Length: 299
Image 1 (cartoon, rainbow, N blue to C red):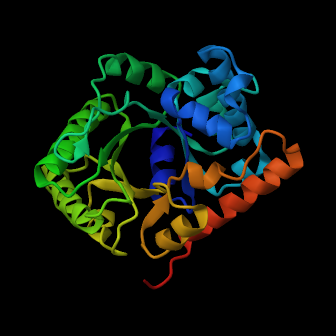
Image 2: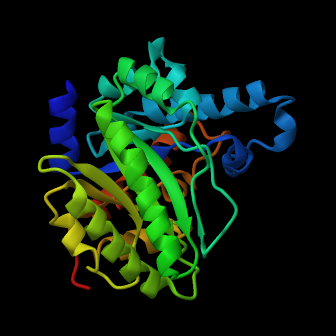
């Protein structure tokens, strides 16, 4: 797939995007969920080797290449690694899966009810390397904990500043200002976020497009103006701590929004499963998430 074919697949594909981008801080938790306890490694290299083995197993499972997964977000080390002797992005492309890369370096401490992204001093070099490996786009995450207008405006402004850098490299940014689903002001935060996003989207040039990765809104259908905006290639949803059942139920009530789940996709996978059991378990999760992404129900 060339870049135009990848853009078409992401815009029109009947499927969802797998989030395989757990990074340093969340890797031990991800491995524990997979049945690999912390004592199984003695340093970071061994830890990252174990998580790469897990991701390789996912990517090479027959169900992952079934056509229902149209994209995958990678951690930098996963991007730089290999799957079956190929660079990971190429292994994905060969299965018809569009590769993205997580570029943020984590979160700042909370201020004004939000957590901005930490500085990314090596972003240009990372983007050059990623594009050279065939990666189509990027993803960067901030967090909104409280419906604070100033905080939310700052999050969205920072996200679009980074997105413009990504666009300048000829890549597709996924903007992810996550609203904490446990927030006591979740619905108000959703609404403030919608307003801020529309303002920034309107500031983009004609034909300049981004993707958005958002928490499923408290009010179904609230983000329809984002789905319809000409500068949005695709709107995707994070699971945000919902179980797969709850995330799929809520996602199905939002037309035009497809999944980009991590925990809700991987939660039932275990290191000790046989390859057949592993693929069957992964396939069941893929089927559930694909259905919620493509078959919508009345709110």
